[in-house]
Picture 1: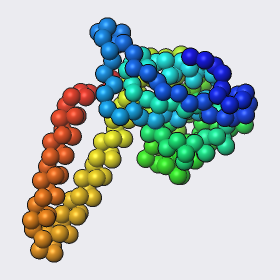
Picture 2 (picture 1 turned 90 degrees about the vertical axis):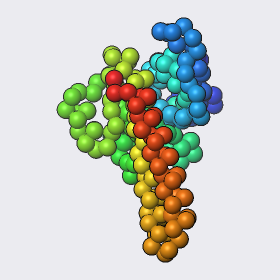
Picture 3 (picture 1 turned 90 degrees about the horizontal axis):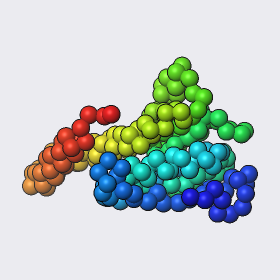
Picture 4 (picture 1 turned 180 degrees about the vertical axis):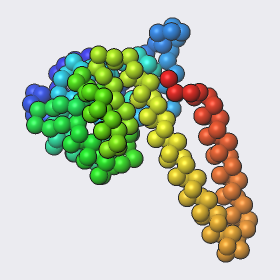
Length: 211
C-alpha cells in the first residue's frame, strides 16, 4: 500500500480511501470468506503506518471492507455524513483532536455505528470510561492481532441489533393490522418474522461464541 494521500499532503486532512481486498486465508491457504456486500470502515488515525497496519490486518482476515482514513476533526465530521461508515476505528490521541471527542460526536449524531479504539497509550481506566461513554471495544496497538476479531464481532452485533429493531417494527405493524381486523395481512407479517428469527438463530449458531 502507498502512504501517499490521494489529494495533497497529510496535513490537509483530506481522507485517504481504499478497498481492503480479499486475501488468502493464512490458516487454510484458500481464499478468505468475505462473501456478502462490503462494509465501510472510517479510520481516524494521523499515523499512516498505523492506518496501513490496521487495513493489512483486516484484509488478511478476509474482511470485505472499504476503508477511508481521516486525520482531522473536520474531515471526520464530514465523512461521517458523506461516507456513512458501518464502523469507526479511532486512535485515542491526535493533533488538536482526540478519540474521546470523536466518540462524543459519533454518539450524538450516529449512536448506532460501532466505535472501536485503536491506541498505543490507552490504559485500563480510560478504556472502561470510554466503554461507558458508548465505545464498543478497544485494541492496543502492541496487541494488534485482536483487531480483526473485534471488528468482526462489532459488525455482527450491530447487524443483530438492526435485525432486532426491524423485527420489533414488523411485530408492531402486525399487531396494528390484527387490531384493525386485517388478520390475513397480520399473519403474513408474522410469517416473515418467524423466517427472520430462524435465519438469525442460524447465523448466531454459525458464528459461535466470541473470541
